[in-house]
Amino acid sequence: MLVQDKIKQLLSQIQAGDFRALARGITLVENELPGYRDMLMSLKDTQNARVLGITGPPGAGKSTLVNALLHHWITAGKKIAVIAVDPSSPFNYGALLGDRIRMTDFYNNPNVFIRSLASRGALGGLHSNIVEITDLVKNAGFDFVLVETVGVGQSEVEIAGLADCTVVGLVPEAGDEVQTLKAGIMEIANIFVVNKADRESAETLYRNLRILVHERATDGKETPVIKTIAIQQKGIDELADAIETYFAEQNTHPEKRLHLLTEKCWQLIQAHRMKNLKRQDIKNALEHALQQKDFNLYRFSENYY
Image (tube, rainbow, N blue to C red; front, top):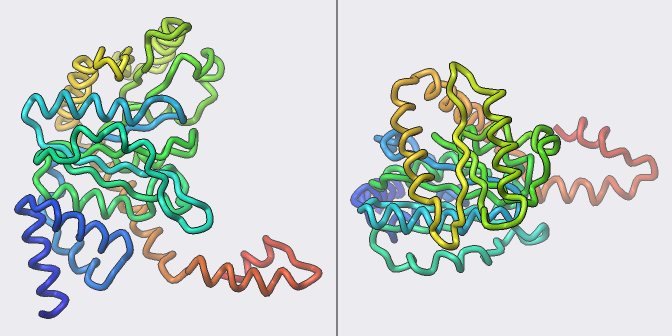
């Protein structure tokens, strides 16, 4: 069977909701194997499923929030996909999958698809092909696609160019109002979550965030701030309602959709123009260049491309 025929068959299986086919398709796109671009060019209805980004600093309980939202939406009869981007080894780019243990309740659930991706050194807390992978997953008939970032801090802002709604999770230890104002990641939140709200100082962080969103409100609309204790499922109903309300209101703001698509297109064009640059080739060239006494990284980089 020709590659094009295999791709067509695989895509048909994905659109029919075949999780095994979807897993194979993701592997195809993740590793840019033969036929992956033909499959991407054949995607349809990629705007139906809503993409929810879950981000925040390490220790904010992102995986626990995802797990709690899964419990809520599966009970409501929704079909959910989770794309969890994990930190990678800087040497072999394999993923560290420790957080996935929190989602073991759903591994055999027919309405939940979970896939871990290694960040492979990509900045922004995501995978370099996350846009393409997410659009492929959206073709499998899900209601929501949850994308959980690595949790590296302020460089995770790329999630804002991917998700229809971005939830930023924080914990009481996140710091006072001044530190909050300085954190670049705060600019991308559509919803703030103060997780582990039973801890000391949670109320202080909550009040400071409420002041912050009030000062930054546009058209009289403030960014929601919600307290949760995700491990106990507390506050999750309110969080899910806020997310669904945001999705519903987004339909009335086509300029937001245009901005989101512009960001996605920007990322795709960047990736396309960088495709001929291979990390191993750079490593080999660096190994040779380092033998020169006058080695300069900036001159090397300028001359390389």
